[in-house]
Length: 139
Image (cartoon, rainbow, N blue to C red; front, side, top):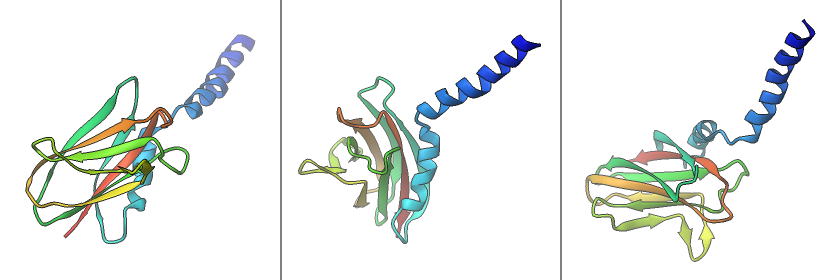
């Protein structure tokens, strides 16, 4: 009985410490939703986890005449080091959250052409290992 108690205690207590030490990108992505600027409607949230990768990339179809906003959230209230870059269907960069070596937590993009756009997240050396992001739109 004592061994069973020690096992159950270890699972709940030690397992809990492990879970809190890890970044929960799913939770962070949902926390980004209320941080969309006023007037933007939520479209999609993204997990942004480094996981040994150089970058994380998603695609989404943007519509001409619509303004889109992409924001970034990290465990430490600022997302310094996590860079979101938006590329059009020809892979031309149209917006970035790193401007003049300054990090911003959101980018807004007025879409001029309907098509597939690529949302790429890269990590500077100082970046958190993971974060979240939300995509919103307004017309």
